[in-house]
Amino acid sequence: MEYTRHWSMDTPEKVNSNLSSLLFDYPYSFPYADKENNDTQLIPTFNFINNLLKSGGDSGGMSPGCTWEKFEITRDEYSELVKELLTKELHNLKEEHPYAPNKLIIDNELNEIEVSI
Image (tube, rainbow, N blue to C red; front, side, top):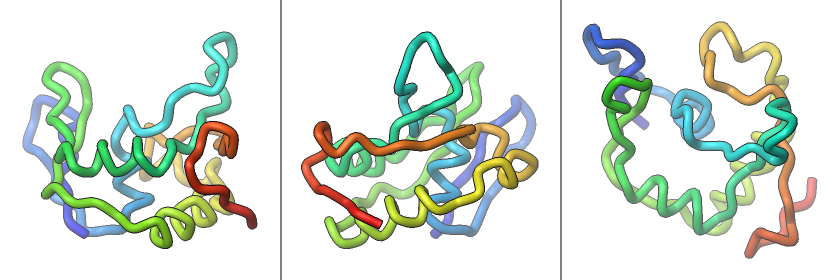
């Protein structure tokens, strides 16, 4: 997939990668699991992800952002995405994806789809 990073006031950067990279590059993809501890973030629910993807993102204005052509994913694609996100070595991503979380968890009670690894 192709998307555009708007990380600075300079020229936007076109990226050709996959969905997990888009989510790591978009600073608002993963809500914090605990407001007191900014180390752990939640993998969003299926509906949240699809609402985000259908929005096309935004350039962030004075903040960083990403834009893409609007789309949505299936439940099976979501399950695969969650499995991928939960098995990523996040500490290795920070150089290429500075907005990637330090730790990701999924809350199956909040989610409409239970995903097991």
